[in-house]
Length: 93
Image 1: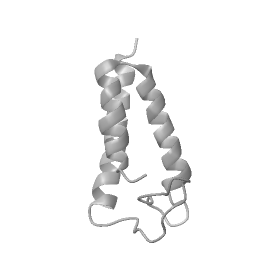
Image 2: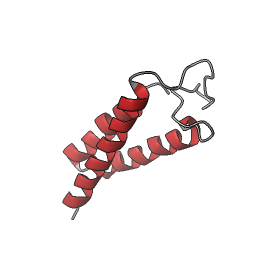
Image 3: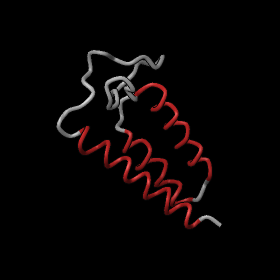
Image 4: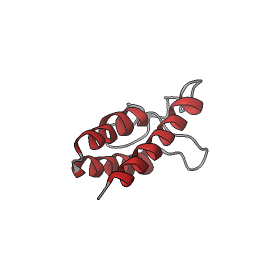
């Protein structure tokens, strides 16, 4: 898995959920987040790993953070997800 979380969750699934209201996109958000929580978050040293192989094993040769990832992409992803989910909850019947 190599896309940034912000691209995968916020731009693809949450935007699709907002545009269509199709609950399958909410399920997809949950599935992607579960993968991120299980395989990408480094609970020992912090931050997220950038990629895994198909079996979900982290690539230890790939750096976790650089100038853009940690301060920008990860924070932006979290803020956008909170905003979009809050908006979706406000619009839900």
